[in-house]
Image (cartoon, rainbow, N blue to C red; front, side, top):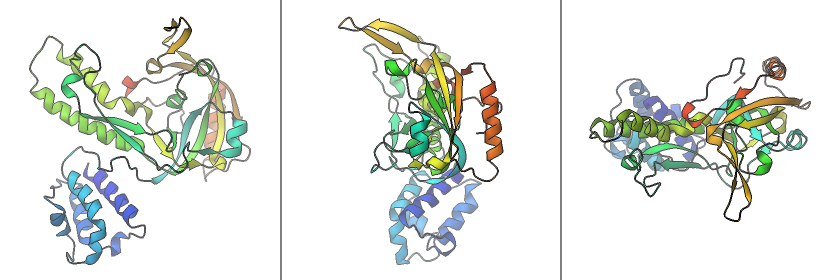
Length: 346
């Protein structure tokens, strides 16, 4: 965990000071200490002052601008599985990998425009979640006792372009909340992301915090009428459910980095017609129960520009996907991390 916190701290410093250079920084002594202890037993700092004491010149006036970042470091350093406390903020990092995005819009539009976030002026915003208690009028024996525990969050979809390294996860989106998205073909776009936001790492850290609190709670939980194993499984799924999406995001994805659109038809495991209060038919699809999908066609982007060494691999992947007529399975929350698919380029 300390290596993850060290990486997050360095990125935090770069946000504070875009010209930050570790070898010339006023924080050099502290950074050397962090590198030396990150792989061993890192000891917590009692205060920002104690962290500053590791710097070569504690009186250096340049240190003041890093006080906020140092405060965030002190909250987590040496304290185990805790998310680096950026609150709703996300740090932009190098990603440089192939990803997938599910979208209802066709290649004619996407190949011409690329992807941009819904609210251009909005910074990428992470939504941290806690386990809710009292979800029903009847007491919930699994969730009520752990209400307030940290759980995996997700990205505000208006604040960035969400992607995933899993084609099977991408097939879930857009979610089938409307009639026209239940049976209508949708497109999975094969894209290349250079810079973006590793939301999934943040989700993992939040989930680890919740799981650590859960282990401590269950170690002293008194026996009840419900099986401890059943309660434990419900709680584990509640805390880590969003991990299955392996979510990442970018502010934009240039049209030259959109390699292909894969048209699919989805079939849902939970799909029924109900009557609402006005006796009108309403389609009810529970995406959490997942389903399967089949590839209908593939459209490649003739104007795409491939990073060095990627073109042949991507083309081979598309040929394999197009020739495979078998249905592919979408993951559920309970899968945690989506299963890898043989032949995946991700």
